[in-house]
Image (tube, rainbow, N blue to C red; front, top):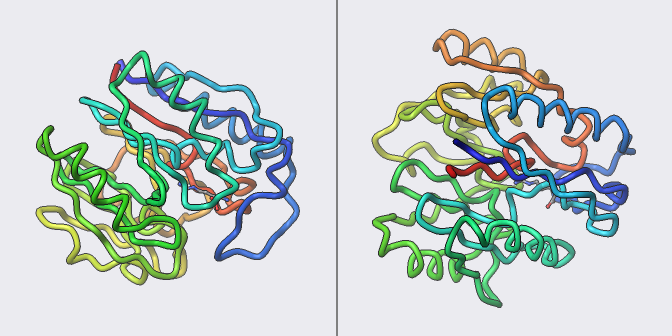
Length: 254
Ligand code: CIR
């Protein structure tokens, strides 16, 4: 059985970190309603959802993906790149402790989970404004004993590696090649986002199905042409906080 950790949208999300987007008003209630529909989809796909309560002063705490990398053998608690987000990790570490041996990224290294893409035993880490080579070296030390290979990947134009590329089948990546080069990844096929939908590369893969945002119909068509089973959700309110779908959960095998 798989578990998804989620966290209620904070009332202070209006003060979220923004890197590439202009600040727009965010309707907290609408964001919460979309978030709970996302949780309902996770449950419908068979996951047990462990929902953490709201953290009223942690603006970006709904984006739990950035706080940890959870593998079958262990978990790495990150040290988020934005200082305002560092204290988000404590509650997540506490929740994960019964399930996994925990490793902790040590200062001054920085990494956000949104920059970490696992494809089998390959772990790709985006070198973005949030994540650095020091963190990759630490993760390499933690994870090499379990047979993982770490790869640093240059990302430009977007916040995180997973804004630019995510996995949609065991051997297929959905990619925006304008933000990350395809030749960073070996042994996989690619589906490109529609060029008019640069933010469309973020999908959540659960078993053989993906969760995909309704905002990107042209890329959705490309996925459908490739016969990728899909459930769509509205996520435009949290998108204003520069969050996509993978950011809102930490999924792992129990
Ligand atoms: C931030 O800038 O940290 C948040 N406003 C958005 C984080 C989104 N997380 C993700 O893509 N993994």
